[in-house]
Length: 188
Length: 105
Image (cartoon, rainbow over all chains, first blue to last red; front, side, top):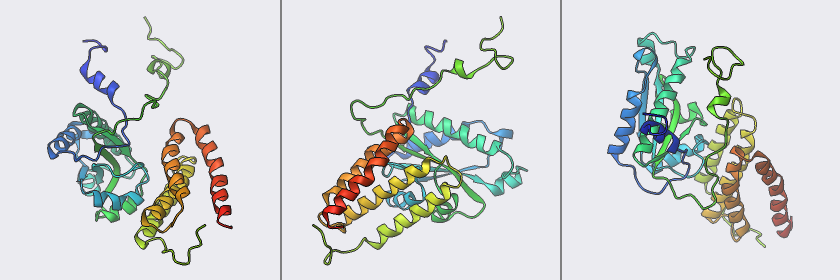
């Protein structure tokens, strides 16, 4: 298998952030698949201190929106709030306020969820621009549950013609060095 | 002309949502990239415009609907055309002022 015919890479290439969704519910089965993907993501020390709250009630999502500017365009059909359980962290000797791998674990779960959504024909959009304290209060979270990230999920709305397409950016070769800084190719 | 002696105010629920949004944005401005603050402010203006239109509190002011639509369309420019986004920010106050002048401001 090469990079050209690798189905996982193809899913990665196809995936885009989706900010506008059709007004269609996301099935529980699909959401469970996305959550399973998060569970399968690697974590530091194989720990499980992440928690997931799935919200599909539009009225509840609408109430969260003022506290979550990252939900930029309307009410998504489903919202997954990924949180860190500080009690579980404490029980597993994780110093959550100091240990940056906690956020790395949030990122690995996010990547898995977005790829799983893509395989289901669903769009997704992460949001970190929200008030942790405001959202936690609105959701009735105890102080030991810290919302870290929200993932909006839904069927992508059709894009208007003449859209921007994929945003340009540097190639991986431009971002990578080999063995030592300044060496752009691997040594022979 | 809309001189609103008989106009109702913004519904409290809409005003409270905007209040929650503004205090949230103030918090986010303490650590997010500085230019996000510009996005949050113009987005707040869009939210206020929408609430005024959808609640009927704005009376006959179709320009508010146009403003809200324009903000919805242009705010995403912040992510890939910052110069265009800022050009939009610079032109919007003039357009709002022109509408307000028509009302005798």
